[in-house]
Length: 122
Image (cartoon, rainbow, N blue to C red; front, side, top):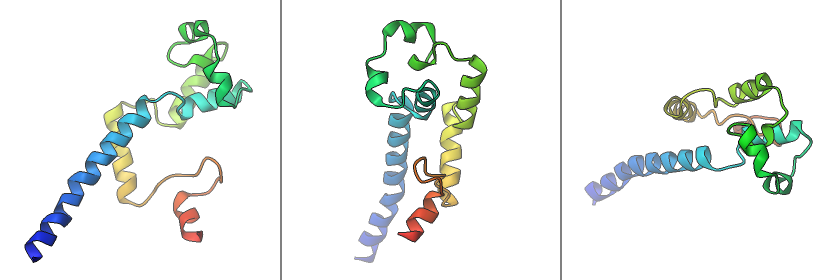
């Protein structure tokens, strides 16, 4: 019985790792990430409908971000650096794992406080 429980507990590690890899991949490839949200806020289009209904010509002329047309490329680079999207995906994933191991889940975009502090106060 002890061997069974130990095996089950050891299976938690690869399962959690697999979930984190899948989650990271989905978040990195899904549209509407933090860079696109920051761009939309700069342009005054903070709602999702405005970005979905945007013209395809904006996307073609702005590189990889649909709403970036007409913005200074230095501002886009600064936003990408702020959110860590200037690094390769493998480095971002390693940084994410290192932060998770230290229980550093970052800052809340909505509350302006650390996630750990918000969880602790709840």
